[in-house]
Image (cartoon, each protein chain N blue to C red):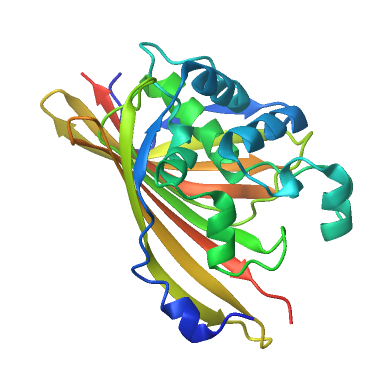
Length: 145
Length: 136
């Protein structure tokens, strides 16, 4: 069991960062999953703002699970997603991604159980260095007794 | 389009959430969580039957689709989404809904604040806000 101090110490943890390019095939399949038609002019469906910053930072959903010591597949709950879009994402553009943990704390329920609340913040920039989008993900890691 | 406070956004309906699309989404996201692609695992872990659980971003994407059809592609500036009851299962029918809560006139159009949410048989599944720009 990870300690409360270890959870608090996650604040400021930075991911390696890196680049991510969304290929046409990826946007095609991603958009189909949403039940929508492809957007015009090679624009990527905005739902990509979930995974592109994560993978672009050279981390994975698995690693995000591990950072909060997820106990099972059913232990992750979503508090919120907060996405800001300055420019449309486009296919075949190598976006630069940076990210870090901006909040991490243990919270206690009235029944004595507890969960970890962890917030991840990611920035995407285009090849000219212009901000393209931000993504803030806040998850709960519920813990069984 | 000229929007005003109280305008309802035309709803967007997903008639049946697809398990196959969840599988594809899991591959794209590199999401190892089997609750999105293994019906047996869902049943053993949660006891809710053999139906996979839709990824949170997919539920959010239905509201994005609604906003695009209403205000045009690239209209979204910001989205904030809470997940009060995020148990959307394969086969579920869900409906994206929204309404305009504030309007700010700008040189080239209007900046709209919208309340948006996703409804299922159990009530509100996702609930949030969107900032949308519509050209004059």
